[in-house]
Image (cartoon, rainbow, N blue to C red; front, side):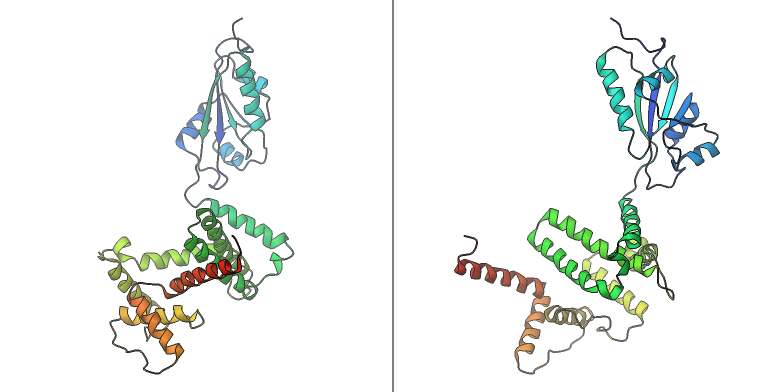
Length: 326
């Protein structure tokens, strides 16, 4: 028994047109517009699909209907082309039905084409995070009450957990912890939108850092030249000092960071500025630690990371002595 089309003649063509909700409606690829204009029929099951107003504005007639696989075959029989503008779910019922018909061997199947009409750009999923954060801020009893000050401790915790994931070399954990740190940024930006005196949004945050990065990388975005990491760092610090109106190389160093990190940062600024500032000659454990931190920085060692590594080794020795984990 030969396979036949439902109404006889050439089986035609079905184009499943997919779009990304992360791209502004109406911004479709040229092949997509061609397919839409040349189609005999354009169908869409979702009457509220964001693309529909733009398609109709362009003169594309769209029928709001959700055909079965059999109905779709009938619509494209006789060599006709039918474009289905897919909903967010991707029309699984329709594609499953077409697959069953193709597997039955009883009908002559039309040419089936999946045509992406718009693509996500790198970073597009960040838009999903912003939308999710908007809803959580509006509807979650806990999240809706949070403030910058209330969240500050979580930012510190997440940063330390990120460092731990990096030092452990756990890629899955690293991906998750980066997400947790990113959440803190988006959460604070969302809270900032509600400030009555000086509101700003996540777009303002991103715009500020983009401007800063371009300005501080003239060797990438301008005519300056930098051939070594040291030259890049020196220009960065010089530009930063001008931007901030700083009088001292120590300006901008957070004094509440862990002690070893603070000491290493001060030593780094002194070395980068080519200053000759000897370490204090006073005696005491604090000054001994300061000297060790400065030595570590000069040797390219992060004293905080070195101490953490040593402390972990000590922890394992303690657990071994206790018979834990054997």
